[in-house]
Amino acid sequence: MSAALSIDEAEALPRKKRRNMLPLLLLAPSVVLLTVLVAFPLVFSLKNSFYFWNLQMSPQPLGFIGLGNYKAAIVQSDFLEALWHTFAIAVVGTLIEVAAGLAIAHLLMARLVGVNLCRTLLIMPTTIAPIVTGFLFRYLYDAQGGLIPWLLHVAHIPIPAQGLLGSGETALWAILAADIWQWTPFCAIVLYAGLLSVPDDILEAARIDGASSWTILWRMTLPMIRKPLSFVAALRLMQIFNLFDLVLVLTRGGPGSTSRTLSYNLYQQGLVDFNIGLSSASTWMIVILVNILIGLFAIFAFRDIV
Image: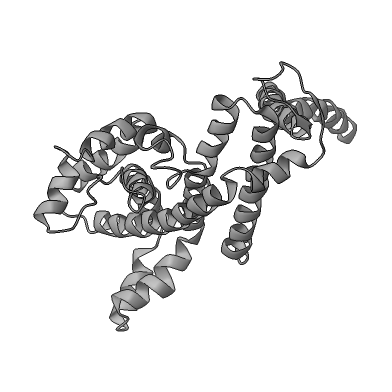
């Protein structure tokens, strides 16, 4: 009897291994394809970042210049100015979108009348392509008949004579406002899902013990939704850091270079000036910066999460 069982177990073992390998085999083509699609552009740009290659001069690289493109990207271009603009809107935009999203998520938890309709409407801005959002806000910001300048005028808020997109003091923040309008609902939906996972009995016990709403939020709710909160903050930080569509449609980096971001700077170098070497160096500098930024954020946000 035991011998028969041993034979059956021996025959079942290969079948079990094949079943365990099946998901990996099905995923393998997609993983290989994605790896190639990601690796090839990175390797291509890394190689050409060490060569002088401008398509306006030659269809082929003209020579190895080492770190020359990296130095030129910092010294000769608007890289540092674009870096400051990008860092400013990435940090400010992430804070505003996450905070506003958390506030909206709490309102959705209140189970008010029409909350289901509100959840549906919240999804709509995120379904619009960023380029379309740019054109929409371009008309809303129009100095002659735009809705937003009219509302600001009614509220007695001063507007630059050049318009919100024509002034160097407001252009960058007008771009950020459009991004906040589109992606705050996404943050709200994700954080609303996180709030649904918080046990009601724990919060009710805290209220009975006399804890204030602020104490419950800061000491109980936020720690319990730390994972989705950190996820959505990291995601929005990366996406705003690579903001390009809205800049292209609304200001093209202007007036002057007052609203130029790193992604738009990269577009200008590679697809307008055709400087492949310089744009490749800028690409890798952006990759390194984003990874450092996200790495520091991950260390801070996930250090206590197992």
